[in-house]
Length: 53
Length: 483
Image 1 (cartoon, helix red, strand yellow):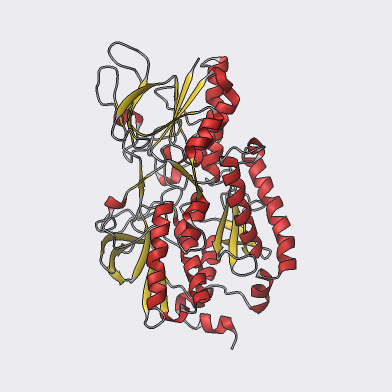
Image 2 (image 1 turned 90 degrees about the vertical axis):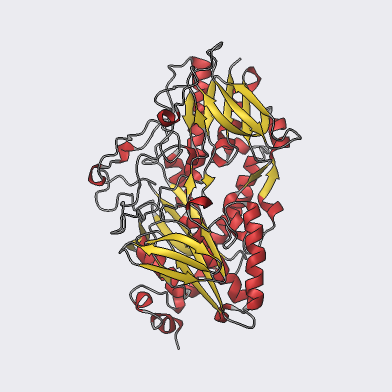
């Protein structure tokens, strides 16, 4: 059974939110994709830092 | 020679003192008064609290760093402020009581030309009966986190054979710093999975937020997967995915051994049993007294009722509908004494950021505004800049500004610590205080307010840990590292 089916079934509160599917969960720990996101997030954070000083 | 006294050696005070000394050089004197002998990178206390870091990895001794920088370091707590001096002298001064270096209990007066109050919060465990009696743990200091980990490991051991209940969140209706508890609960969940005991643990969240993802900032809207969504959905998703149910809008009003009593926003009451609980205490000002030249108590003139110092903010107490971003301070200068500033948690916010709420019984239940981390550092640096300019150019020098309504913040909430396992939520928010005149829908710039979950956040948290400890130790190039 898909993991999201298990969690959606646990409570009404859980059922009314969003839960990532298998692909989204996989991408969170995919090193190549995460390296790309690491660069993007750092660039975004640098912009926020520069706008804050 | 002018003397700047900085009260407090945390993120804001340390930033202010070290930059001021760097800019002023040996011509002027910088004194730091802090009761602590060690500097603590507080965000990493979370990892200490689950046994993934040692205390020694998140602290370092202040004395050698200040000696190298030429800063006069007094390991003492400030007791009172005398901004008009006393009978025989107009020179303002503070009184301090030593807490270390073999001088414990001794008192002294330190005169100043400029004063920066960066004392951080008093961890007000006493606000909730039972919260300071050892029934719960905290991760607010490195020592607290060490203790929390020891207690957590006992629970993990018991969970190998029997069901255990874990409760994490806020220990009072007026707490701030939900982010620390948020990060801690997901680290516990992650470590429980690693230890193979998750199935025997019931992990529950309890918070004073009226909705998950409020974080004391009234929530935020962020770009996720091409949509602009409320942090409510983002946070609820995290809890649901990890099978962590929540109680929100809760004022914990009493803690007993194994049981927390609470009142909810709808006025109902309840109790939650636990085998292990980490409940963040509310923050208050450290409790200074202030006196005028005649020795009359002027504490209420300088400090707000919660003990935080009044600065250039709008404290008129106008209704929620009239709140504006411009109510928030820009220079952090005390309106009555122009040579006094407050930064970091020590300044009094003009009002809540989250919508004020209370139960039908009149109990206020809402998070108070966060002023930690990046904003604390930026404000500390701006205040130091202002003081240095006043020393060099005279008291009418232009003051530097750092409004939280024009400032962003970056936050990384980890769930685990490994380079290839676990995930972290990396978030930025811009500005911290929403500006509904500029952004009428969300109050914030959604190009720079975003959240994302993944390993990248872990790597960023590791980098931040090492980078900020490197900076705080004043190692080569430290001034180039942004706050």
